[in-house]
Length: 303
Image 1 (spheres, rainbow, N blue to C red):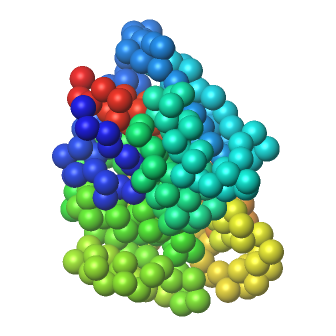
Image 2 (cartoon, rainbow, N blue to C red):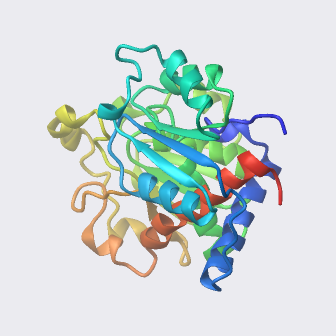
Image 3 (cartoon, one colour):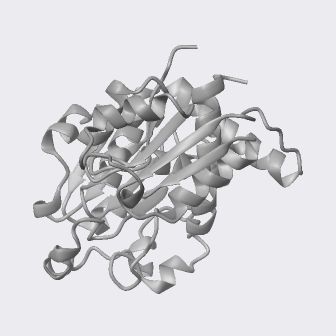
């Protein structure tokens, strides 16, 4: 089997992404029924973290365990990645010892360099460019609650950063219409928007973006690495909080998602987080199931 990487959603075809999402739903059902198999017995996953994590680490660790393999957690203090040893050398070393690697890094260039020199599959577990694993969970969650997302309207409210970038890629692969509402200072890369103009629209008014949407998504205003900008960002993002009043502009059966952790009272209100339209907890839980399906696909192909 040819080695594959998952650095962005665009590394997979629409058909392949559909398969991973459906497989995640099946694996979740099997787990609920107590039907666990161990197809990756004897296989190892290296989890390399430059940035902190809750859902990503637990999701990958449990997923690998339930597949019969083992996951090895490597924090910045546990590796020489980029400090004393070139990223390429670390990639070559780990490739000799494990069967698959996931990385969460501050710079996407680190993941690209690692993948270039790795002989085993590499997964982007979040970088400054994107968060493709989160989108697998989001798409799984939508399918479970509302069916196919093709042709639906999605609104992304907030920072035009990694989650926004991944939603742009998702609109292309999963064929939904995306409207992004963000302050002009924090808009996504204009070239990325232009290249996806048939699916993506950029506005500055959250109410306009949310109108009649089937899915409303937000993320923190100050992502990891932007903490020093927090006060400035709070000022710039004033009016971009997803409140019940804003959510009521969406379709009557719309869902609300957030990749978490959420800053209640900033990008989302307490009431929206606890509203019946919010599926953030199922979304978080689906990180494990979708990542399990992703690992299985990268190592075994379709089963």
